Length: 288
Length: 158
Image 1 (cartoon, rainbow over the protein chains, first blue to last red):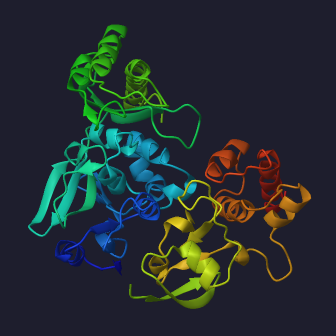
Image 2: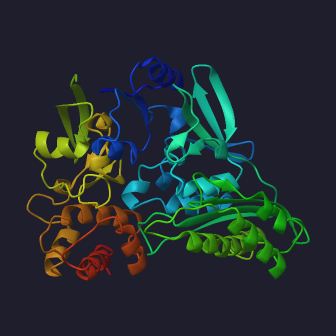
Image 3: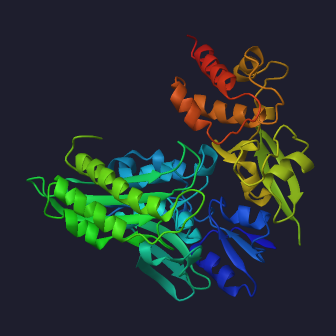
C-alpha cells in the first residue's frame, strides 16, 4: 500500500484516477481504517485529503455553508453560525460515534460509506445539501441523496472525491431537526433515523419542507408524500397523522437484532412526528 | 511496502520515526516510540483505550495512520504528569480508586483532560456523554465520573 497526502484536490484526483489497483480517499478514517484492519478491503493506495485547504474549511458562501469533505463533526459543532442555521444537521453529526470518532469523522465520509443507517445522511438530505464531486473529468454537483446507491455502495466514479458539502441559504423562519431511535442512549447504530427541514410562511403555515428517513431501506429515503402532508398546514394532528402514515409507507426495512420490520415501520412515523414538531418550534423561534 | 519517514511532535518534543504506510499511529507510539501508555483495546475505534490528541482534538490512535502524524501535534498520557508530579486527574483517579485493571485509564485520562480544558465546569451528564466512547469493564464507571468531577473542582480552584 502507498500513502499520499497531496495539497490540492487536482493532485488527489490525479493520484486516485491513476491508480491501477484499489484507491481509497482518507478523510476521518473512522470507516476506512476499520475496513482495512478487518481485512475487508486492501487498498493499494490511500490518499489523505486533510492537507487540502478546501477539504478542511467551513466557509460561508451565498448565505449558506460549504463544509470541506474532511471537516470533522467536532469542528462543525464548534461553529456557532453553522449550529444556529442547521441545528438538525449538527445534531445528526453529534450522534456519530464517540467524542473520539467525532474528532475525525466527516459528513462526506458518512455519505460515501453509504451505510443505510448513517445518521448525518437523512439530515443532509432533508437540508437539501449538495455534494461537490471532483474527478478526472472536472467538478459536478449532485444532491446528496444521489451519492449513496445501495448498502455501502456509492455513485462516485473512479478518481472522484467529495470536495465539499454545501448547505444552502434558507429563508427566514426555517429550521431542521434530526432524531434517531437506538436501544440505548449513546454509542449505537440507528434503528430508524428521520431528518426534517422546513420553512414557515409569516402566518406559521409550512411553506416548504423536506423529509428523509434512514435505516428503513437499502439507502436513504426521500419521503415526498410526507413533505406534502405538512406543507400548507400548521402541524395540526391531521397533518402529523398524514406525515406519519407517509413515513411508514416509505419504509422497506430489514429485520435484525436492533429492530423488526414492524417496529421500524412504526417508529419511522413516531420519529417523523416528533422531528417535525421540533423543526417547527425552532423555525417559529419557540426553541433554540 | 516502502516505509515512510515522519516528523512530528509528541508531548511537546520533536520526534522522527519511520513507519509502514498502513501502520496505525497507536502501533507507532507503542512499538516504535516506546510510549506504551496508549493501550490497544479493540483496535477498531469502539473502546477508547488508545485515545490521544492530535492538534488538541481527542481521537482514537488506532484509527489514525502513523503517516498522518506528519507535522501534527500529538498528545499522549505520558505528557500529563510533570516529572514525578501527577496531573490532578491522575491523582484523583488514585484517590477515588477509579481504576481496577487500568487498561482503559490512559485513554480516559487523555479524554477527560481535553474535556476540562474546553469545559472546566462540566455537569455529570456532560462528563458521561464525553466519555461514552471510553469503555471500562471493571469499575462500572461511577468512580471514574466522581474522579473527573472532583478533579474539575480542584482545577477550578473551587
